[in-house]
Length: 379
Length: 123
Image (cartoon, rainbow over all chains, first blue to last red; front, side, top):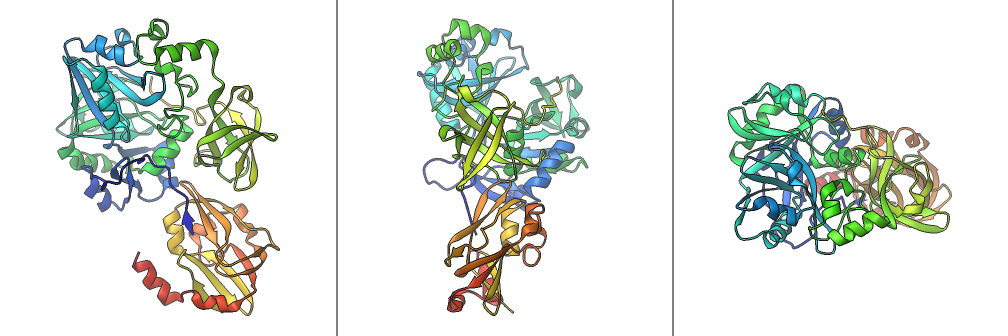
């Protein structure tokens, strides 16, 4: 028995993995720890399948403290951030969260991120594996008057699933009730007596929350939430299968600097006013792709049979290679293999019949709309 | 019947020149939820150490190497509908394939149960 490489984000130097505030907590709960994005992280506790299904029917608590939390503030921060990102901040209200993209000058996707307007500045959450590069890129793009703080003392938790609200509500206290938060809205609360920034957002397709708290309180708050009967800790393995079913791309796999936003199906990360006005890095590439379309597109594939297609598998139409799989696995909710792939645009109509080459076999696959499993956001 | 183990966590039960191969309980625990087993073709001639089967779990695919050379005579058809048998009954009902051994002397390089237990504890 020998395992093929597990999906991971740690492309890079060989340095000892760092430990996150919940390291001991995960080990105490039987979490199987692996290196991911330069940190030791739990890949699973009781098993990916059970954790996945638990999140879909109840609530799962994810430690995503490896992600980068950044606070950007100072004079002129708003125009400066608009010059750096394709976001329209004029329509982003205080406490609102929006998905955005970080491009290089050629319009290649360097990262995707969440931007929240706080009363005095902007709170950014970026991917763990890319956060150091992102901080460098943003520092270059932002003028000296704008301060960039890496909130590296913070932990970040995600509580996801249809029962996340009920479990969390028992422990929060704030100026606004938790029920006032709809999808992509956030506010400050006391959570178990600890200062927390909570937004109704996540990476599973379920209703749920992302919770920023001081790292020193992370174990206490995690213990508190996991003490609720609806809540179990969930590892990175199920996080990956959940986001795949939700059709959400994983940076470094389903979007890389090889692609622009259009090709990656992420045009919504470039806000309407900015599509027209431009004025962000890589605007010319985006505008051209938006007007002319791209040769390839990121699409969803549902496979026949039970053999999963994995990242790197070739997509065929007859004898012609028409694409490549960027994420794939067995869907615990659908009980069939699913995949994301970049495929030549002419073969991407819903229902188009393709094949995936896997270990010398041809697996029949059909183009299907994403998400594979419907989103259940609380709008 | 004698059971041998490999360092890659396969087991083989040998009776005469017939072997039955599976993965160990330790291996299935490491792999997690098994969703599909790609079994070899019956009649195939294989050499010790060849990758003859692949076990898919939710997170990854893993090669299974044959512990001995020979000809595949039978595969566990039940795994097509119930791949999770490899999780729940790895060392009995979750067997993968049967093989007619072409060189029984190869078994000498494998571990017995006590040696495998020591090996797993060292991991």
